[in-house]
Length: 355
Ligand SMILES: Nc1ncnc2c1ncn2[C@@H]1O[C@H](COP(=O)(O)OP(=O)(O)OP(=O)(O)O)[C@@H](O)[C@H]1O
Ligand SMILES: [Mg+2]
Image (tube, rainbow, N blue to C red):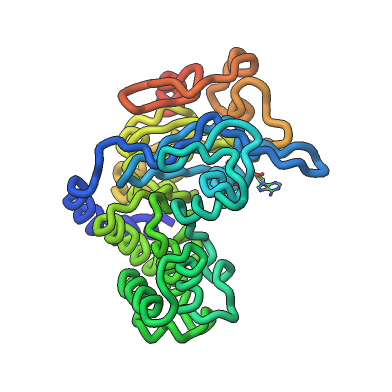
């Protein structure tokens, strides 16, 4: 695991330098492209109401990558799907490109799905096995009536293949003839086709080999630099999110528990859950690694059908105190652009980290 993270970091570092160099050009400062306002998404199931997303507010600004990290089941994908209205909000609001899309009808949603595109974890499952690669990439062009049929469409498909670094002759192949990395490039080409305002990347590298993961991350960063793209980057791998993101948010049981820049989160986590996640990420320097304390969380994530009262992390928090059972902490400022939802933010983390 340690070696894996170290290699991954080395591979993406180069792209990081390129990215910061190119970032200032295409960016309107602080223009909000997409916004969730106290969103809840609940699913009725035989076991009860699953509170997949339970009061999430976030803003994605033009030209940035907002990283969303958290354990399996914390509600990351549901949050991403809500931005495309692929799930219906139970309450709260969804705004995209200045428009309130919370209650848009199915017909209007077609326009939204051009503005927001999604890349999924498993490119094999998201591509139709019977269609050629060219036909898959052309589909959004047809649905959104973006090119005339014939030569213009063929030309645009070739252009999209070029952009994601695939040979043009792959247009006539089928998904099973491509590698995992090539298929994910096709998924990215499809997402680019409608020139969206926002691309939701839901674990885009999780199913790929290590060296291919770095290639796809580098491709995503190059495309962002060249096209001024905006990303919501979802992953459970904290190291990957740190390297991809300008800002990041940590989710636990349907809520954002901490948000800030990767540097803030990495150097001074304010929520005990973030501190625990970070303590599990190996550090390359063996001297630092030996001095670090691994914070082991007891138990599993509680069921989202019946989240704990008060702070929902308290059942696993090594620093939980009586107040945590009675008060549900809000996401409050702990520094500039740095927020945490913990009654004892900062203090609790310091206590956990002191041997
Ligand atoms: N359509 C659905 N019906 C019922 N429950 C659902 C549905 N979609 C998601 N859930 C539940 O909602 C919770 C959040 O799921 P979600 O897929 O958003 O989490 P995630 O953070 O993306 O997890 P992972 O890392 O495993 O992808 C989980 O408990 C999941 O089982
Ligand atoms: Mg998911």
